[in-house]
Length: 432
Image 1 (cartoon, rainbow, N blue to C red):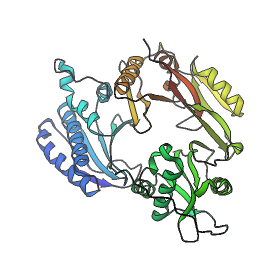
Image 2 (image 1 turned 90 degrees about the vertical axis):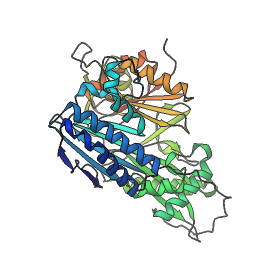
Image 3 (image 1 turned 180 degrees about the vertical axis):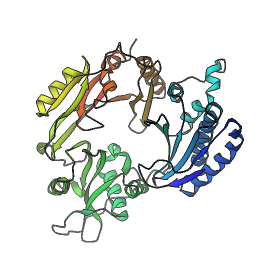
């Protein structure tokens, strides 16, 4: 029943028919997932939480969709373990996964869906995909825990002439992580907060880097990047010992040359290192106090972009400024059929005090749901709220009015940031 898979994009291979009576095997499923997660490197508490979340979803499905199939696949992503659940789950039940959904013992419906309420709170991240055959693919993610690094003093670099940047191996990733922490301080990007996290993300294919070594083999400088979409990469850094401007500029040039012809259309940088060659990039706008800079890598082809009366003017100004060819279409009107309940994903970065919300399912209650998320995380002390809408998805193009009502304003556009261009919105005030 549990398949440990490692191939991204593969549908769960372990499938079985389930019946209401099969709830008795839930404990076996929980035990199997926990053992597998431990084998993939999760610490005991994380493995137990992931296993319980899978078991809760299984019991809910088994009692409501007897005779349907239920598949479980665990994927080893090194810095996290993913449990992919392929099952039959009514779309209208998915709103119970919202983190702000109250657990009300006096509400019969909430108690009936208690398993889904618990599952969303047990794991670090949950995403939902709907397949054309009517099934639901839930991805439950549990991250490995890494102790914060305690770094020593920065040694003097040993000259190495004009050494060329090379792809970072595990040792190079550790050296680069150390350099990021030394040169960027509290602004260090999350992947480099510990050596082990950077190494595991690289091993999983979620992070890449180029490094330049000095005469003793130490990392003298480096630049990293990660995939936002197949057409858009995010650059982290560059960093160099002594903030060597010649070296950081050369690292950016080498990266761009490597990306030409790969299908990547653009790169952008928010978490920039000292010596980032700002003059060679255009500014997309600002998020908080930080500007976003981007660079066109190859010609950008036209594509449709869906918008409402709020997002259309913002997109039009952006497209004109960057000379991007887009077919801006009217998003579905608010009066068209819209489900009652929405579903949001929340990505939390507590070190940066940031919450990024993304819509998974549309719903008429979206403004209230956004406000609930803001209130919940504000109560926890977080104060940087973002919302991302993918304007390659028609229904997301009509969310502008809902976002304005919840206190969010459009700040920047990430071309090719999702299925289409992505607007990043920031919250400026608490709605009353």
